[in-house]
Length: 245
Image (cartoon, rainbow, N blue to C red; front, side, top):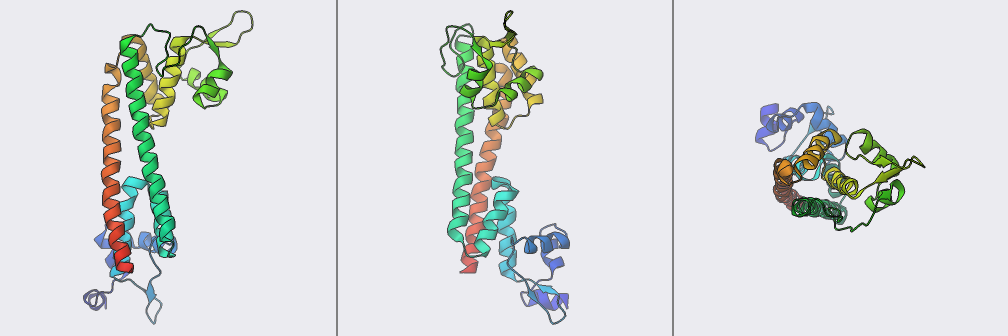
């Protein structure tokens, strides 16, 4: 029966799964999640897929590398309930996130160039001129994080504020502010704390861009890879939309 189904353009779950290196359960799960349109059923209740389902699976698997599993799932669910505008809006949002990440990377590079130009300056890495120290509340507000986040960064050795001898409050000098901005930007770039710590230490020691050049190259590569993956996902999704008519 399997041979007859394939030659007639119809596919069993196992046929569709094998073509994509998946398990049959994964294919069923994708259908149940709305990633694939509902399959036809035989008189005995077995699922029967068609070329349309293969197009849908191609589109989903192509969308995942560029947009992530959650967004790819939401896009396919929207398409399969004929909410194409909603699907396109999700893709637009994903492209906006990529653009934001590119701008973040550029900001980090600009920050590090600022470090190399004058590490002793009272300008922070992001252009904030300071004549003196700052406390944890105002710095957290400036960074858009909670004070608890700054304390967590301190515990990880990423920032090293001194303590006011009278009040015991944390006091961030210009170099600490610079480090906090760098940590914030690197966190936004997806770097975990354990990877940031040695980079910040090297920046403090070397006072230059060189310690981060490898990380920045990797970051550039990841963003370019996402961009290319988004193009492949767009082509596969367009093919599925045309198949749906």
